[in-house]
Structures are given as structure tokens and as C-alpha cells.
Amino acid sequence: MAAEEERDGVGLTNLDQQLFTGADATKRDLIDYLDAGRDRILPGLRDRPLSVIRVRPGQQPFMQKNVPKYTPEWVETVTVWAESSHRDVSYALCNDRRTLIWFGNQRAVEYHPTLITMAEPERQTYLIMDLDPPEGAGFDVVIKTAHVVRQALDDLGLASAVKTSGSKGVHIMVPLDGSASIEDVAAATRAVAGRAEKLDPDLATTAYIKEDRGGKVFLDSTRAGGATIVAAYSPRVRPGTPVSFPVPWDDLDDVTPSDFTVKSALKITGDPWVELMPAEQALPAELIAEGHEIPVARVQAMHEGKRRKRAREAKRDD
Image (spheres, rainbow, N blue to C red):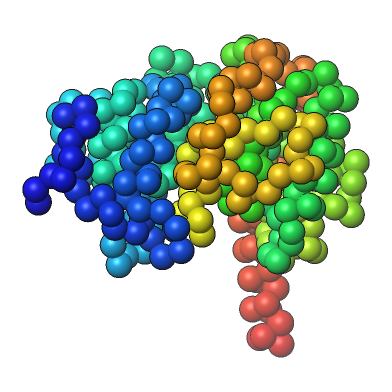
């Protein structure tokens, strides 16, 4: 297909096509956003194995981890063993403008880097709490829950930054100094979630199984180890093409996810994510110890699911 335009050696095509149904943005809008915002976006992607969510015309969005065979040779890649699928995965490293533009031309809308860098693969760079509201809930309950999580962190002497997820929730992040292992960070995250839940059990829950959440905001403490998180400033495949955007804690009550889109986000000057991010911190030893006493949510949910299945089968047999 003949290129309509070229940027940094990347031929661009179908620039005036809608990104997806309800996007209110074209492929050109996406590439313009990524290019103009590259100085904000690239630092959060650099040296981190990258998964993207792409949207081809007329198809459902899909997550791409393995780079396709036609990936240009100048795109940096790294091979990582995936324990879940028991295979090697060739991830891209989006370290420069050219690669970012190429991804945009591939209709990669969302950018999900790992929590580790290839320079320090044994170090998780953030403790992350992902707030997931119940179906049909407004953003106001997410905001209230975010303040509860912040209080739990403040009580521990941990400073945090917050960004909209670009979807329904928010991400609360504590930058780490690397003194804790990945397993200890995971444990500490579980402990923070447990403390926040105790501060307001009518609002927040750590229940991993959806049917057990009782209409409360889920404190997802599972972002650890090999997990990914949508990058700051990444667009999302959502109506209006919102982006995950940093917000000062004092302003959180006054924003909604739709305030920040590929067409509006760059009107905010500077780099709020850098400006709002506190210094790297060490995790308290007592928090880590507390977390190691809390079962891993996915494992606990798996065992509970099996228990409930056995109970249903036994009841049916009766």
C-alpha cells in the first residue's frame, strides 16, 4: 500500500480512517498525538518489554505481545520466557520516536509496558494499586476509594502519585528504590490493599472473585512481577479515545476520565507525571511481613473456585 506521508522514515497509510467505532478520532489523530507527546510517552516505555492493543478496521481490538514477522529490523526486541504460556515471547522495546510512530501506523492504540526494565529485571519500579469500580458505578466512588488508599499509604509514610487509567478507574503508584524484591513488593501491595479495605470496608474490597465484591470498588493488588500496566499518557480503546493521565491529588475530585483525550491532553503543558511523581522510596519491613501473611489473590480465588464447584456438584448429586 502506498504511503500517504512519511515521518522519521516510517511510511504512513490510511490516515483519515476512524480508529474504531466511537473513537471520535482518526488514525492521523492517534499518530499526531503520539508524535507530539513522545517526550512524555517514551520515558514510561523505554527499556520495558511492551504489549500493545491494536484495532484493525472491522475487527475487535486484540493484544499483541509477540512482534509480527514483518516488524522492521530497526525495532529493538527482547526475548522473554513466558511462564504462563511456556514459550519465548519476542517483545518490542519502544525506545525512540521512529518505533513509536511505527506502532501508531500499526493502529496500536494502547501501550502496556512491564513493571521492570531490561536493565534491572529483578527490580519492580513501582508499587501499584489499580482501582476497579463495580459495573454501573460513577467515577465519584473511584475518587473516594483513591483517597482511602492514599490515606493508607500516608499512614505508612509512603508518598504516591495518581493517574486516570483512561477507562473507569485510577492507578495509584509509589516509586520504589529497588531495595525490595519483586516478591516483597507483591506482598507489600497486598498489605496496602488490606489496610485500605479496613479503613472503609463499605466502600472498598479486596475480593478477587467479582460475585463477592458486593458492589464495592475492587482494590486490585495483583500488579506485580511479570504484570503490565497501561502507561501514563497512553490512549485507550474507549469511546472518545481517552488517555491515561496524571492528576494532582488535590485536583482529583474535579476530573473525569473523559477530560483527557488524544485531542485535548496535550493542551496541558509540561510533563505532569514527572512533576507529580515523588522520590523513590523503601518499603517498610513490617508492611512486607504483613503482606506475606496474606494469600495471593489469584491463587486464593482458584482454590475457592474449585471449592465452590465441588459444592455445586455435591448439591446436584444430592
